[in-house]
Image (cartoon, rainbow, N blue to C red):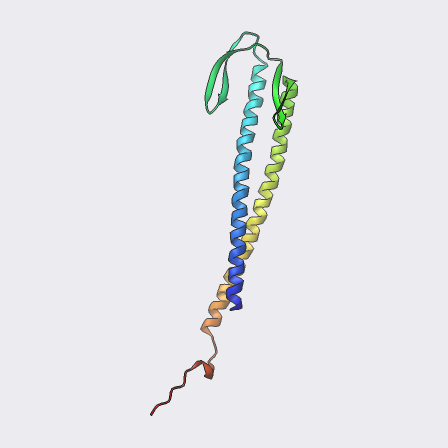
Length: 157
């Protein structure tokens, strides 16, 4: 019976780790989306600096959609610095700020990937423990010693 309890405990822990791994994978996916968006903003700002006033351009607005626009001012950008606060920054500072955010995202990604690997390793150890326990349970069942009390005695007349 102790073996079955141990197997149930291992199964429960494995389920918790699977759920945690799924959460980390979702966080990594969201982080990649944000990173790509920030990277696109940096590229757009760097390209914008090369244009002259009144030059025409296609302005990406997301999901592969663009609007035609003319450059009115390519010296400053409006940047969301967090909590919905938007500030005006010179383009070089805006690029530096966004690249800094990308660096922070890289750091978070590294931590998430490390956590994912730690969970994967723990799951592998639990799987090995479960396999060993299953082998032991099977062996115990096959080599169960004969006990007289295991046999029902019947009286014959």
